[in-house]
Length: 113
Length: 114
Image 1 (cartoon, rainbow over the protein chains, first blue to last red):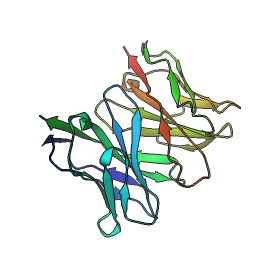
Image 2 (image 1 turned 180 degrees about the vertical axis):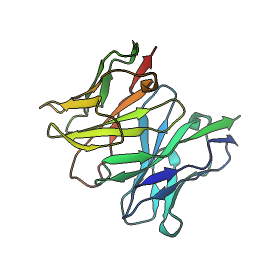
Image 3 (image 1 turned 135 degrees about the vertical axis):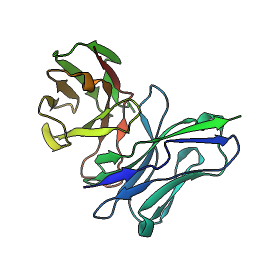
Image 4 (image 1 turned 60 degrees about the vertical axis):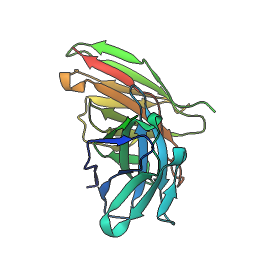
């Protein structure tokens, strides 16, 4: 069965600092991987996705993620965090061409001024 | 382009009651998936509908059921509500069979069971 682990429940960074959110997955075949962001009381917004090809993928809002098959990881990064990035971030792996998602428990990001 | 819309936004029910949540998929999308997100947790896949048929199901009991209509909109029905059913219910739409087409989520329905 597929699963996703996000080891960090909470992360606090200073505005302007770099950010890396960790994600490890378990999946039997080539994974479809996603990062979503959720602001309080809102649904999920897709940041980026990996289906195949280049292992470094670019997303919206200046985010990027790197797929590392050997480490079963898909970590999210941003070089300079803005206060508006404070939110909950979810990593997910998809089956059925990415149509059925298994989510991690999420990482809550707080940004210090 | 119209996004995914869900109704109602909030709902309060009591144990044992039944509830119906509604979802209109994004224009051009033919597949609808439902997720349950308990407080402080990630979303959990309930089931997916394609061509008005259930196309996959997560680890949820039969009292969770759904429908998809010819216009691709969908309903989630939950019978015999339990306290643990309190959660944010998210609907997502996508285009089935097309790679590189991710799911788009609505803002959810917050269900509270008293």
